[in-house]
Length: 141
Length: 398
Image 1 (cartoon, each protein chain N blue to C red):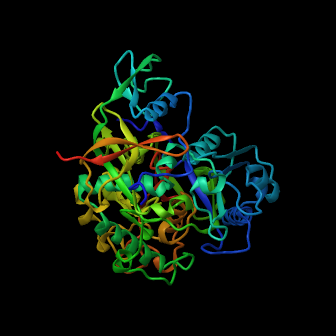
Image 2: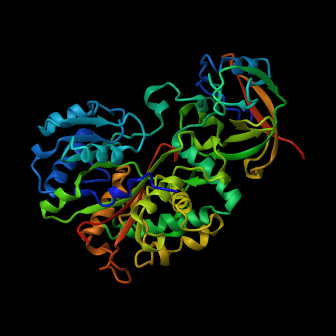
Image 3: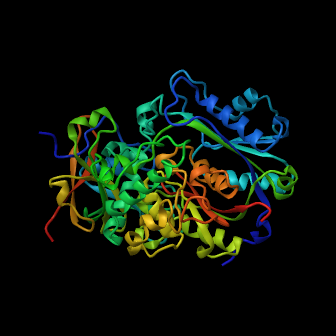
């Protein structure tokens, strides 16, 4: 059985200098985000500069991995041949409690049962190529 | 709020020529050929000689398909046999052609600016999924199987379903209404191919909540328009349309990272500024030609322009308003959904054709139950609702 919709695809995330600590965190099953050293804004995507206050300094904080589905779509067609065996699968945006929104997958449920606003918890899917992808499962309220 | 002091520019910019090509499925042609045919026809429509064109602006650059050459401004100018003072091509989906042309014409750098688009994407199977062409993912989304602009719009649409109660019951009316318009437009790719709301509902899902009929077609074809000052337009002695108002805004960030209820799309400031510059209200708009890459984009744009409250879209999008014979016709050529995919030139050229009375059976004021519009509201937007141009056009000389 496929791994319940986690997108095991040929495509790796961009390991930019800014994003690398995030993806290295995922490999250790930790969700890390930059927090601005001046205004405290937690940000994603990772960046050289705070989009709120333009400060350059930041540290990395670990997210508890809890959040709510902001929106989601159900792919019923494979836009790339590597995904044909995985249909249908869910791509979603999840608002984490720390204040960032992450593009991700939802797994472990029937897509027709999903709703915006639903609480979810992060898990990690370790790909064969060494990349670990964060995905989310619905949790009971 | 002020439209940035550009009230003085009201009705100073004119569209004096529109150039069409065969469109839909037109096999055996290069993308360049569609640019060239559209440009030649637009120059002739304006009553100009090609030597008069001193500004050439190409819509966004697209990757060449098959054995095609890369279509650049150099190539189009070379094949047209012109030597424009200014050549430009959008590298991406920024909707900057109008402000660019306006600057060139108002400063006198150019006298006649040609704006063109062309593609053979239907015959050559353009997917608009970049990963399929070049192999490398555009962003991290691909790792999660998130491909296509469609999915990115569908994320917005799903949240709008949750917040505002919209959904396929609204989008089916947009799709069916635009097809009815296309069936009055012999140029439209979907001319003679009626579509009912039931047909829409039985179409397959691609990225739920979007069905295949929520998305624009990918067509072969080209389109071009000629812009100049209102003074020169008058001297040409042919029908033309003027820009009474415009607004531009780039939200820049993907709507994925925007919050629906914040109403922060570029359509808000762009629409507001266009109305303020034109000095008119929504009640004075006689028709709307709205960039409709997806059915939901029409809803989002007109919502953000303030035509209805977010929760009232189902009451607003009814055939008696938006369809043939309706009180506020929307996308009277069939639009991107049912006429042809020529980016923002599809809505803009239809507005000019309607205002200059050249729309045959679907002409507003001729079609039973309609009246000739004084003002037509157009939109153009780029990428995923990130770059927005709102335009209010009226017939020149009126």
